[in-house]
Image (cartoon, rainbow over all chains, first blue to last red; front, side):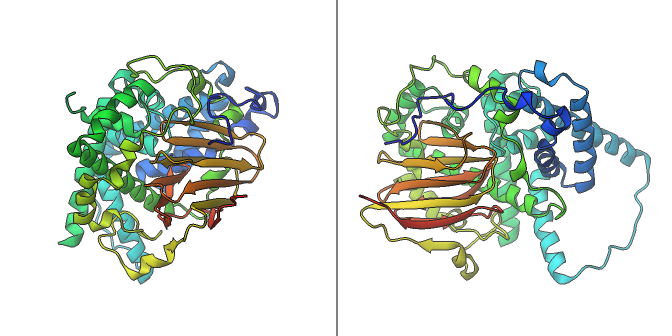
Length: 184
Length: 262
């Protein structure tokens, strides 16, 4: 027994576009900042990169015609995704051109070391995956439906079931490898 | 029928298939221990992924706004696509909307995995699957520990029901409830005018709008399994009158109470 009538895919008190009528464009898109920050941070593990990419993505959205977009939220995620990809390519190029610089690691308290170690380990699980697998899995975990993930990741919707299943399988392998490392 | 491909199982698991296709697979899975075990594996992979991501989120700078403050899709009309387009790979058109009570939660076959024979083997040979993971390290926990116990509380059902209340949910928040039983599950939210409830095939999605809300989920005590996700994070799993908290989300508190049977 459902107290809400779930047959209603649309909500009777939901007024499509109601919020679009109120407030400036900046006011309207600003709430998405936290969401994009989190998404990019999940992708990169880099807080500075997350802030840069989020700012750039929001600026681009400010200059776009949001009311003409079929799915503005997916559009914003796609812009952020592309910016992350561009950034990764740029970093890889720079890495090839520059010599690694050895430096002393900063001294950290024990609890911080432990915390960082945990984060490094979960990060290493995701780093074993391709960028596209990471994107898909993180988008899926963020509650996106498969068709929306396809839109953000720029793949054919028809390909999503296979791509998502492969990404899950590769994540599982990476995760088991990490857990295996832990128990060994 | 032949065993479904892994992509079909994932689509089933994610609620992406049409009702007709779902029902067809359910019939197979009910009689196929291999497929139940494959689904169990999918569930544990999904939980592991949620744990990994929760760990990354915990490393966010304190100064950042919390993602809870994000506007729901509806604020920007961002859910237009969802409202219009059917799943692209649904092999058959969606039938006319059916009330959940008319469409029994037979997707249970997918989630019954937790109680299934095949699943039992998977779970008990991999103790970290069922370990109620503490918020500090849900992803890589390999064995039950005392430290995890504060995150677990046992509820003795009264009159056969368990009520889980989520209070202090500072909207907008998306809450997904997955359940795996043919028993009655009732979900009611109070507070926001913008409540959006979509449920089908053993899951319910609620988009809470611009105001704080209280969500009351009544699980029957014989529920084989249920999962509550807030903004993509699994925060609790429910099984046979026991709720295991699997993650923390700021501003969300879970309490339990006996169901009001009056």
